[in-house]
Image (cartoon, rainbow, N blue to C red; front, side, top):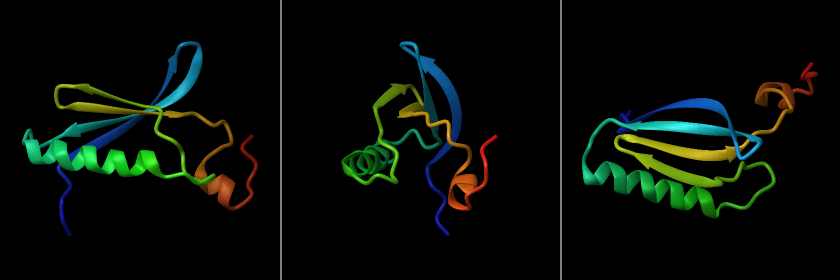
Length: 88
């Protein structure tokens, strides 16, 4: 098992009047390699085009914190969606 050089938190936010999800990554290693690896992963994810993959709308950097902005869908949890459970 390889420890990744970042941790993440997920928050719900409102930006320009609409809800979105922000994934906050804390780059543990302040090395250029850690940022380069993260940027490579983001570049790959942002090119994916599939109806079941959530798009990355924006990327923000603030020191050791990196934020990925994604749309928020009010359809319940992934488990609810996969197993047909009601989100109410």
